Image 1: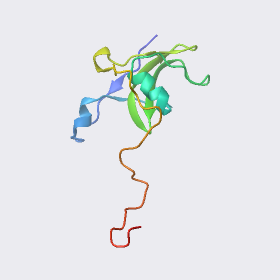
Image 2: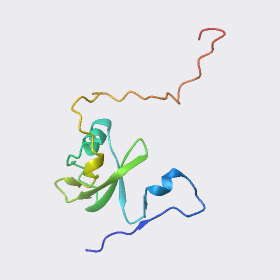
Image 3: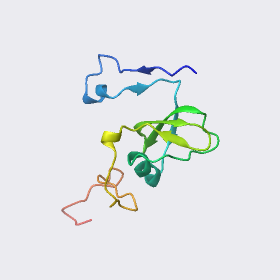
Amino acid sequence: MPVPILEMKSPVEHSKSNLVPRTSHLVSRQELAYQQALAYLRGEALTLPPDTPRGLVEVCFMGQPLGLVKNIGSRANNMYPKEWRIKTTHLPQDYDPILNIDQKPHDTTTGK
């Protein structure tokens, strides 16, 4: 089975994100819920929706790519590097955004 090709961002796009390969259109993309994203970052196997194509799948949380899994149908094998995995057992149960970008700025003059 041929492996999809990973393509790098063009040299014109200079940023730290050039260090992370961007997957090509050959790899499908799957959005994860918060608990699934934590499980992925801990190195656990995931269960993806049944309509997810088999093979390499890019997993994302809130639109941000986390990495790749290999979907074999009944589960998705984690391909996140072992050295980067979350090792702590104390993890928040709910997602609490650090930056509330969607909220209106607080008006210091009126207190609202």
